[in-house]
Amino acid sequence: MTTVIEKISNFLDNILEFLNLSQNAIENVVVENRDYINAEMNVVKKSEKGIDALKEFAKTEEPSLSDALSTLAETYEALENARREKVEKLNLQFIKPLEDLLVSFKTKERELDEAGKAEKKLDKVKRKLEKENAKPEDKKDPVGLNVLKKKHEDALKDYEREENQAKIAIDAFKKEKMETIKKILVDIVEIQKDFHQKMINKIENLEQKTTAINVGDVVSSPENLGSLTEDKDQINK
Picture: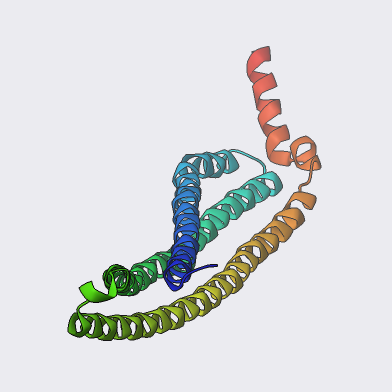
């Protein structure tokens, strides 16, 4: 049969296990996703040279092709600006709330420490009471026994109060965790939708510019023909 002390110990162990599992999982999410977000920011930084190269290339080409290349550069530039904005939002609306949740863990752990102290105090008084009760009747100290019974009663009440507060704290934390993560997920959906919608709009514009490229510009351009004629005349001379 499970004793009161064993039940108390099991209760605290179960809560601590729940907290530790949740804490470890959230810490891992924060570490790994901070790395992912930093990697996204590195993409933004490394894209600048490629975008500049496209802009310079666009200056050397025929009008319709130049327009499409410039639009491609603008599309990439807009993509990276949107990515930078996404990174900032993820840090603020994803990483920060999880870090705040970990701070809340620490508060709950301190509250559980109080329940743990009450458990140890109850266990200590209980053992003394059991030891006194185990003595032969002629060796027992009635006054001392009554004092121990009163201490045990008080220690049990203290623990029950701390246990109740621990239960309230844990239930509040579970609710806080659920609300926090729900809000994070809602925000992430909006952040990603906004990011990809901006990209779709830019890509549609790029598609129009690409379709408008006139391959005939290279063949029929009077400027090109004039240049070719001049080159030919120079060679004949």
